[in-house]
Image 1 (cartoon, one colour):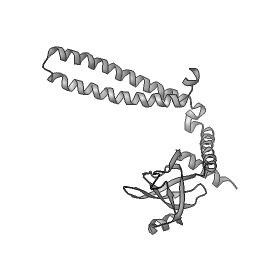
Image 2 (cartoon, one colour):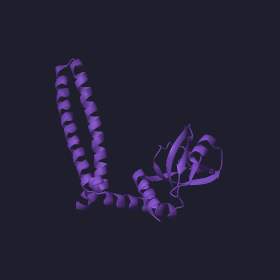
Image 3 (tube, one colour):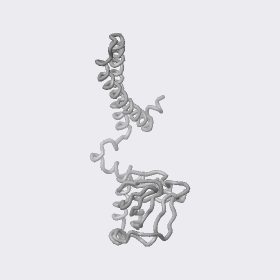
Image 4 (cartoon, one colour):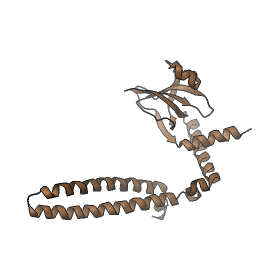
Length: 210
């Protein structure tokens, strides 16, 4: 039990559940308050009144649980919880995330990429300019996925020559090959992701390394 309460993952799930409960219960409460005056039978009106009171307290309880989960998740971050007030701790944490991601992509023949520009969203996928950890940029086609600019993903992909949007290719200095993330058969090739802040910390470390 103590181990469960010490898990950030546990409190993250509790926070998600509590948030859903707040929205669902609040919606039910509003609906009950709206329809109650239009119910002709006094007995049913009284029943709706009791139910709405119950739902109201469920909303209050869900809000309390949500706040508690947020505070617990924040506290379990350790020194990292203080953010800008512990910059070295935060930087070390972010670099650890990045290094773990690099180890994972190397072990499983994946790629770690950052989306720096999205220039076409289609029904079957999205065209982007992506950047690799070493700074190399290239056009990419994400099958069945719509990535957002700035996001960092671990992907299963292949490289081949393909059509480019030369205006963006020249602007972002991307190379001549296109990265195809996923495939038409298997769908999206996004395996996971890391915070953009971890990518930025790693690039800063690379620039500072002689």
